[in-house]
Amino acid sequence: MNSLNRVQLIGNVTREPELQHTKAGQPVTTIGVATNRNWTDGNGTRHDDVEFHNVVCWGRLAEIACTLLRKGAKVFFSGRLQTRSWVDDGGVKHFRTEIIAEDMISLTPKGYTGHESGFDGHAEPTSQNYDAEGGEASEIEGHYGEEDDGIDI
Image 1: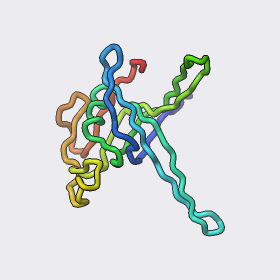
Image 2: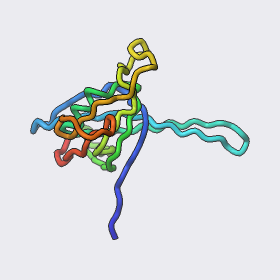
Image 3: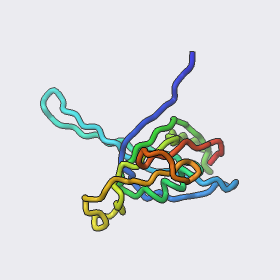
Image 4: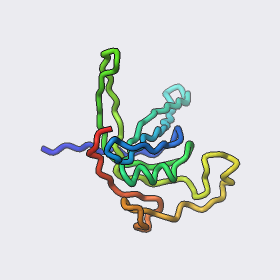
């Protein structure tokens, strides 16, 4: 029987994306994304939970994400979960579960700069779209294609 490793999330970018490169020259960025969950318990008390996720983008998707996304921007990511481990200088083993992005849709209107003074709330949605090679792609606004993520960080 086959298995499924698929993640889809909509949330807000928690920090400015920063483009880095592997030793082999492959572009990569890790983007912090926060998702919210609200519910009311049996006593009528409202509760709010926030989850923080690390989303890794590779190749052209990493470059596009760093160009378009800003702290506070609303974004959709689709991808898969991957857990990596490492041993620090003190001999302690660490684990980190990340979302390896395969698709991204910017849900923030065009003109959003990540600063309130730069966005008047009346901008039109993003109208340009790029495929994985950076050329104009389909008419789905802000949608970006699958990337190869076979290079270790």
